[in-house]
Image (cartoon, rainbow, N blue to C red):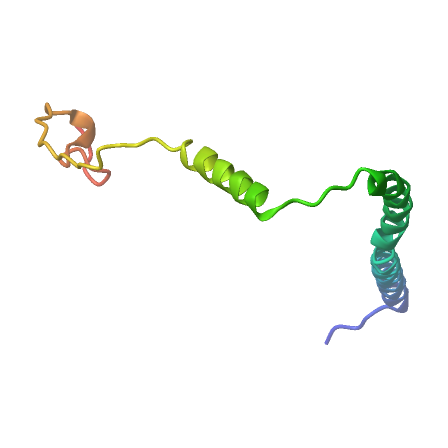
Length: 117
């Protein structure tokens, strides 16, 4: 029968308490920081809203409506530009057998199980 000394148990409980304290404090810190990250986009929205209000006041004077003809011309130009970027190939696949020379690297007689003498 093994008898446990009290000093050994006290050191173990102290290590357990310190370890659990560190882990739970880090988890609490992460929880608080991720909760605060939800408010971060709202801060940027307020800044952008103030900037857009200043620019929209000056843009209202120069605002012009796009007609259907202008929208059609822009969309056609984008379509032609994006489709022109691809190569036009013949789309014909040709398979020709190729004769390869013997290579000892691909030979099966020199497998890992064979011992060279």
